[in-house]
Length: 545
Image 1: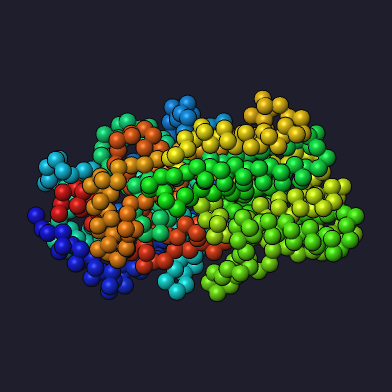
Image 2: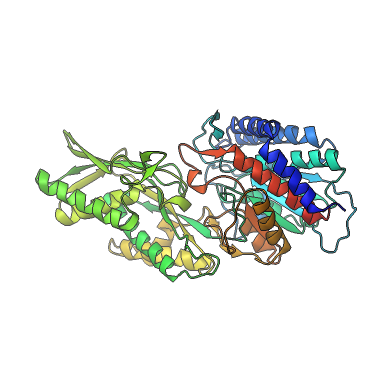
């Protein structure tokens, strides 16, 4: 058996002078990102897009490994829908949302040259779907810009890059993985994880792997735990109040307070930074996704306040928001302020239009971005305190129709998912009770049927985790001094729920702050180094080195 140092030295040479390898990664990623993988109400059309992405993945990998075994594993809808972790696909009304759809699974056969003891069959998982809107790829200054470049097609290419390196190692050294490697390419992670849930429930497939690496935009860090997240949806019928924006702003602020309380109570050795976020993603026609920080909202105000008093109230609202989240007009990103301004006023015939600016991004990066909906709620609260009789209308929302608020709350293993859901119902219920809504009706108006991910911890002493951290340092990806949990949620928890003793890590390229943003991108250097890390890890865990 060759020494691992020999392979580390070889991949370090590839990383220092591997133009051909980087070209392979860029070409693979731009090909995948050119395919629209956003949700689609027409599930037949969605199935065609998914199959297009799968065929592209298969073609890329088969150039290096023509002998691999590929399977389109259908999704057992009836089996899956009875699970607590199942998420109704919000993007379609179809009664058969997974007909003609599947996950793609590839098996890279091991040589069988290593004993079972001390080795493992590793499964690797990454998702093909993205949040909307689709953004076509372009390459600039060593980065690929596109929807999904960071979350998560860049990490599909990490997997493909690792397979490519393993083939080069086989040619160069005559060494291959000794035990089977299972590659999972899954759908529907962004909408709740049903693709991975189907595979986690697949007991036949589980017979083929002993450890799991889930690839996500982990900013080059290897994690053994994930925080959880739950999305909420609040429907406010027009019959509740003739001041729907006042009610909605009260709900936003109450949910913010509940989130801060959860954060105060969260004390866990793997989550010292307490990555607890409350995200408000959709307010009527504004926003695009529950877990994507909304970057803009506008509303019209008719008030008896004079201009100076009105401006003072608005400033008070902005000041309160800044107290919570900081002044992002004073924080720069790429040489520019995160937000150029907080709020602008425009006199119109029917009142004063307030335009509230924020900065979009993944909910896990809400503190680094700027939530326009939370800021608007603070402003509306200040306006109603200054002038209780002022009239406020949400831009683009038809009066007399139901107003919807959607967002998400994250948490760590100190708080089980049912506890977090009860906190959300309690916070919203306290507000809605003032409008005559009963406890039973609160449960109907406030739903959490979309993404509902538990937090979990895997073993920080597992060989999988320790080997991955060791190799990360070897390929130029420095790790935290002590093990930490990832401040985001992903499909890893679905496997942890089904197999509590399964060693699981989350790792990968891409900055979470970049995910879901209008300028989503990933550095090819990060993709290359994570590919090298994964290739070395698969060799080590299979007993080849």
